[in-house]
Length: 251
Length: 92
Ligand SMILES: [Zn+2]
Image 1 (cartoon, chains in turn purple, orange):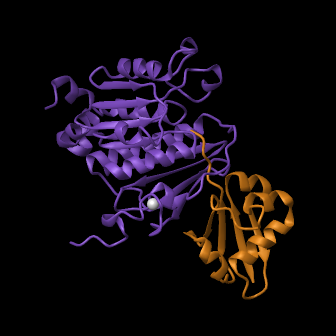
Image 2 (cartoon, helix red, strand yellow):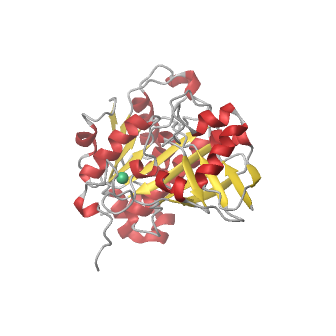
Image 3 (cartoon, rainbow over the protein chains, first blue to last red):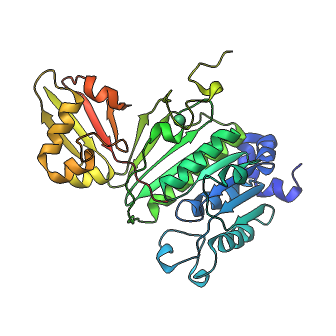
């Protein structure tokens, strides 16, 4: 049940998806992997929208070089753990939600345990090695996974429904070479907000999910391009999944 | 025949955003990629490994549809096709 103050706080979006949709947001637990350039805007919009329980995982501390894009961290946070800094801002924005900070490194060993019990995973990580671990954990636990990545003026995102759609390894089967990436804050700003947007749609059941496609943002041309991607039946992450072997769902 | 190549992210920086290529009839996607590689060592390195195999991490599309590496060899290109190249970004 929503409180009177929640009804007021969310009144503009309750007009869109009703108290039922708002209650779904309130009772959701979303795992946000990363409190950096993508994680900050994604977490901010999910907190503002009233997702009841956010788990934010990041093992880093705030550095001055983060501040051009990681908008939940301020000058006074330099040296503090990112998850502590993020939690503080999110709760001052919306005290009605719960924010669980996890200062951990996500790996194949712990990813499945970390995401277990969550309703949705937001991938706001910065390496594909970590993403592959998280993708497999989401597949194992059958949790929708919203992928995002950026560099410079470019970014992309995709929604993955385990067992039904192409997964991250179907789309990007091999990690791109690692490098220190240049980035202007608006690029992860846009992609992170799109991730939050897809998460809100997914939780409230609004619209069509952005599945089996990669959305590219070309920030120099200021253009979005959609790429269709299909499931790889031989995908090492989701290909052996019986419910997920590319069969059409029967009605 | 004329094929349009649209480059994204790191590739746009090397190739420019949009180029038109004149190719002989019956050219395949592999032929096009190898032709691009011959233009500069930078492009070769961004598209192929040391053995000359196309990098798995680069996403290649023909007319907005992702191509598998098996399709690189078999896919014949036609006049007016649009080939897009996206090396996925990884930052967050
Ligand atoms: Zn897969």
